[in-house]
Structure formats: C-alpha cells, structure tokens
Length: 491
Image (cartoon, rainbow, N blue to C red; front, side):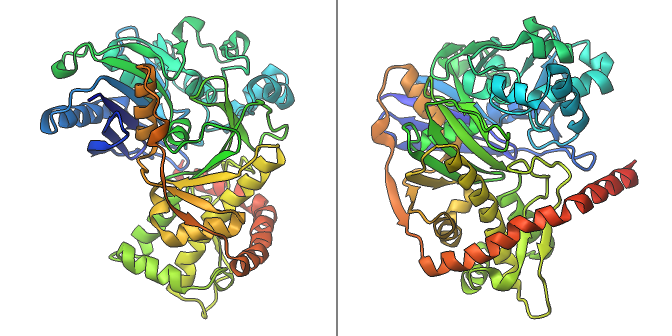
C-alpha cells in the first residue's frame, strides 16, 4: 500500500497528513505556531519556527503512527518572503502575505517598470503589498546590511523543501504570486533589477508535481532518501485537494483569509487588477482568485475580545436564530486591510448600523455575513472576467458551520458542495505527491453535502449587499486618516 505525506506550512500552524493510495487519511499531526505583529500593519515569522514545527509533525507521523511514505509534498502560505545568507541561515524574519508595510515600495516598483497597465499585462497582477517583490525592496531600503547578505530568496514551502533536500526550488503556482514570474512562466530580470536582487538568488522553477530531491536532513533519519515533491501554493493546493481541475470548477475557502478560486485555461488578467491571476498546480492552467485578508480571523478576533467563553455550538445557535441581513447590522471585514477589490492596506474593520435594538446574535451574524459579502464581491468580478463557477466547493474552518455555508449559497445564488475530505492544502499536496509517482488520484474526490440557495434569504442579502459596497466608498478617506493616526501613535 502506497502512502503519501502532505505537509502545509500555514500562518497559524504546520499540518501534516498521511494518505493511502485510495485517498484515505490514515494519520495526521498539527503543530501550532505564532505570528509576530510588532507594529500596526506588520506581520512576520521566523522561518525556523516553520522548520521546527515541520520536524515535529514529520516525526510524529513517522514515529508515533509508524508511517513510512513513498513521497512527501509541501504546500504553504503564498507571497511571504524568506531571505537566506550564504550559509543558508535566515537573514531577517519572513515578511508575511498579510503584512501591509510596503505600500510605498509598490508605488516605486510600478512607476519604475512603466506603470500598472504594463505590469498587469506582463505578470497578470499589479504589484501589491502582500506580494513578495515589494518586501524585497523594503528590506533593501530599511535594512541594507541584512539585504546585502542575501544569497537565496524563497517562499515558505520552499524553505521546508530546502531544509529537507538542500535544494532551492519553487513551483509555478507559488512563483506566480511574487510579482516576478511573467505570464510566459519565467522570472523577469528587469523587474528584479529594480529592487536590486540578483538573478542567481532565485530558486529554480519546477512543476508542482515534480520531485525536487530526496530527504537528506540528519534530523529525520527515518525519512532518508524519501522523494520530496516541490508542491504548490496553499490556495492552489487546496483547490486541487477538493477537485478544482477543470474549467467551471470553483472553490470558496473560509479560512484565516478567504478566497474564491475559479480555474481558467485562458490566462486572462483583470485589467483593473482587482482579481488575481495565478498559475495552478495542474500544469498549464491558471486560476482567477479573489482574496479577503480576514475571514475566520474576523470571527476569531471578535470572539476572543467580546465573546470569551462562548462555545462553538452556542455561537452557531446565536447566529442561526438571527435573521438574514442581521437586522441591518453590516460588518466590513478589513481588519488587516483589503485586497479584493479595493487593494487598500489602510481599510479598517467596521461594524455599521448598531442600535440599542440589536442583539449579540445580530452582531455575530453580521460578521459571518460581512465575510461572505466580501467573497461575493470577488466572485462577481471573477465571473465578469469569463471564468465560470458552475461546480462550487466550500472548504476551510468556516465550512464547519452549516450556517456559514448556507449564507454562501444564498449570496452566490448557487448550490455549494461540501467535500467529504477537507484537509485543505495538505490533502492537495498529498495528491501532488501521488501524481509525481504516477498515481491517478481523481477517485479521491467525493462530496458529502450540498447547500441549495434560498431565494427569500437572497433577497434580504441583496438589499444589505448594496449598502455593504457603498460603505467602503463613503469611508475610504477616513480609513486613510485613521491609519496615519495609528502609525503616528506607534511612532
């Protein structure tokens, strides 16, 4: 019986699963990790904590569960910038995907390259604060001594591959979120010259389901010589893990961040830059993706501060019993800024419409709904680009809530499918590991539940959704003022 390990390097945890050749999960292990936020808008992690956590997870799978895999594949958070020196040591904490410190660097790169239109046509996306390239320029400008030490740059999953195999590689799906990979599939030397990074520091490009090397790490003797597959970006791997691999397939993910992903074979960028265009892990395919930066993070943040002691069942009951539309309470989920569609790092979370009439259930339900309104806005933009969303699956921590799933179905006006296995990017990574060894894993994909849209609920949501979209426009300038005020207080 063949066994494949899928490892995912997340923002809050490192997760590993062992999957047999029939797609059955036979073991799993998770190690929690922490994120540093030393200033408003900043988010960083020491890559060593990823590796330490990955070691714990791999040892747990191998030693406690007595699993010896045929191959290992890695997925990880996109965009986060890892810088290593000539000895392979970390130069500076990894600047994460949700970090917003690089607004000025984005403007500089865009201007020097010839404008946003040229960048979008070349790379499929504008240069955004979350992406990798402006993080490199920020380090060059703010920590020049550390920048000069860089001999390798890579992405989070690639750092784990590097520690396992001693090879510096990345795949096309992850590289397409760096602002350095053009739509033809090559690193663009001219844009890298703008930030002063040497071409020799770039990882080698390899297809997602190809073997990068074998395990050489002395700390994992049980895995010595096991093939390591390069893997893919977390969103692409997660989509592959629930069967998004043909035109019309789509995925809504409600995790720490939230995404809408729809496969396309055309590679057509959004000329406005509101929707991302990235390469998929399946080969030559692309996918359109809309991103919100705080999905379950919005709920967790609010619950920790204002709903301490509230169990999940009690919370679900509160939300379920509040009406569609939350009695007019509207939540904007911009706790870490906004990416799709406003691309505004200064946007801030907002609860609008409160009165003494409202209940705790109204407020909590508004958070569920606000997250979905943001996802709906992205989905409508994706469909406007010509990417069909005929077969939609829902995944992520939020999909464990029947109420949240139903709110998604009602807002999109589509039947939403819940996969039988929802292990996120780790499961997609296991599929990639099996593909690298020649196994067809299409039989792994099964659905266990459907959520059909309710027309009455959709009518209520349509009214609030119009208000939701107008709120950002009316408050945009105030968001900028508040952001500057917060920076002044910290400084």
